[in-house]
Length: 100
Image (cartoon, rainbow, N blue to C red; front, side, top):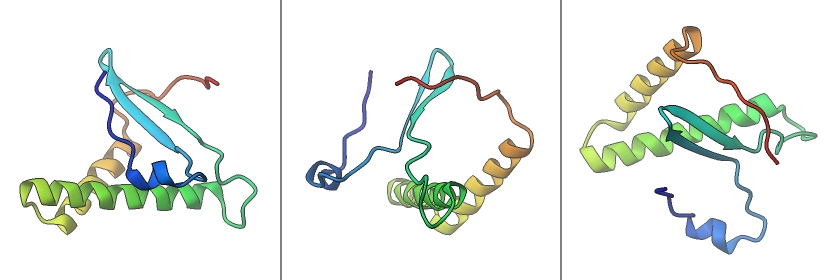
């Protein structure tokens, strides 16, 4: 298995929390997540996850721009377009349960 590195700040911070891991295995997407980290906060879990995913897309588009020279804003637009298309008409079913 090819694992990504844990960021140095996450290793240094005793209060760091892992929110999401994702793999492609056996021809499908597999996800391990911490869905209720934001439960009982002054803002909704849905808002918090929306912000988290938006920040993640910005990190991704920045990485793509640095590696390929593609325009970061255009990359965000293309990712969002693909995201919206997949939400409206999924190419696969998200199924599973909780382990843990």
